[in-house]
Amino acid sequence: MAQRKPFPRITVVLSIVVLVIATIVFLQYQSSVRSTEEATLRGQLFQMRDALDAYQAKTGTCPESLSQLVAGKYIPSLPVDPSTKSSVTWKYTQTRGERGMVCDVKTTSAKVARDGRRYADW
Picture 1 (cartoon, rainbow, N blue to C red):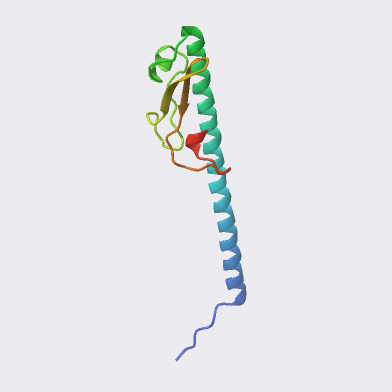
Picture 2 (cartoon, rainbow, N blue to C red):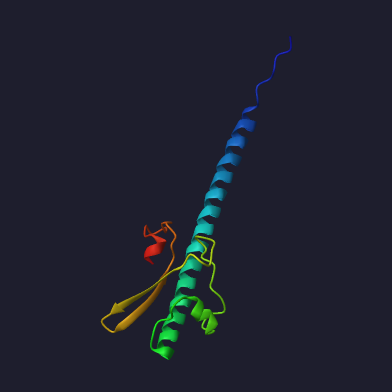
C-alpha cells in the first residue's frame, strides 16, 4: 500500500498568501465601484438640480415633471440613477417655501453611502 505524501508546507503557505491577496484585491475593487457610484449619483443630482434652477429662473415656476427639462433642452436626457439602474426612479418634488416654489430631485434608492447617510437624503 503506497502512502500519500502530505502537501509540502510551501504549497500551503503559498495558497494562503494567494487567498489573502485575492481577498484584498476584491475588497479594493468593491470599494472602488461604490465610490464611483456615489460620485456619479452626486454629479447627476447636481446636473438635474442645476437644470431645475435654470428652468425656474426662465419660467418663474417649477416644471410639472422632470421630462419637461428634457423637452426644454435643459438636459439632454434623464440620467440613469446608478443605484437603481433606472432613469424613471427619480423622486421629483415641488414644495412651497418662503420664497415661492422649491423644486428638488432625489434618488429613491434605499442604499446607504460610505459616510453613513442614505442616498435618498442627499
